[in-house]
Image (cartoon, rainbow, N blue to C red):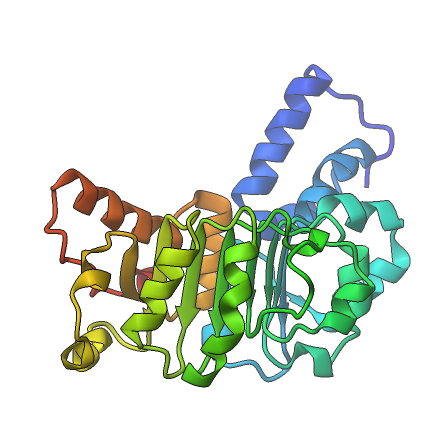
Length: 294
């Protein structure tokens, strides 16, 4: 690193150039950090803005990032937390992806306690004990179960987008608290046997703030196999309900963060077209899995 280099451009302009370069391809930030100490100070926080952890034996669907975006191991992140000033992680980390099984390879509580500014949290395994040691107020949460914290807990206060996956029909009785999450506007369910129209209808009736309710099916068109079980058209007429497929989880999550183009935005587009009359009201399903093309 050149400690004595003198900037040839105004500092504000030089910083803007390096930050644009860093954000356009975050995986290259470690090389930019070698240019000069001032550049390191500018771009290092951007390197940790989005942290996606790869498990040692993770399936490709959960471990393959978008081109140009870094992916970390449990060891590298915990080493950086121990090495660097705490404020770096306290202020820099806004997006955190922790797939299924990562708790077997690292101290998740230590990571959550260090990343207190996380706004977008994908955590496959979450429990109340983890959250009791971390002061988190995420805006987007992707998880396998709803923590048993009281809805008044600050953890829920800013959540607008919530995805619950690996949910089964018998779990639905525990979701009466969803309507008590004050800022919740986007809700989705991924997988499992949850295809009961009465449950979705109840959510739409009780969660008055909901503008998007997504059922993430296993394969495009999967909902059609259950359509004969639906005894009312009320659910399908509610334009807030969308059925769709998303299989490239990590890529879709990263596209949402960096370009605003994830399954949430695709659902919003379909809802807008149904509302405007551009599409029929009963066209509630997105058949093509666009996440596979990312």
